Image (cartoon, rainbow, N blue to C red):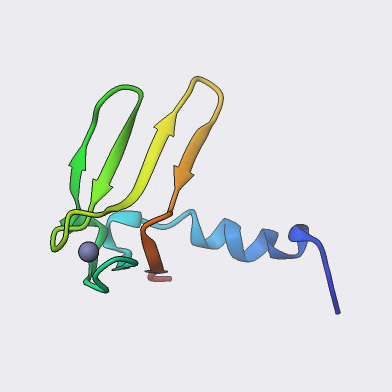
Amino acid sequence: MELDGNALAGDLAEVFAIEMTSAGFTCAGCKHTGVVATLRVWTPVPGAVARCPSCGDVIFSLVRTPSRVYLTLTGTARLELPL
Ligand SMILES: [Zn+2]
């Protein structure tokens, strides 16, 4: 059965309502695993860049505007979210 993205509404609401600094990550570049709290973060305007503590690759970037938040997860092979 194929559904549209609205089918994920309940699961996504649960996932993104949790404390994200304790979420695990796997670096897409070097496969290092850790928790978000251990990432190295630079905060130039207009957003933040979080880098792998092992290889320095960008794990994700977060840009906040007055009306939106842009989260780019290009360097993340996987996020592990505690429920
Ligand atoms: Zn890495």
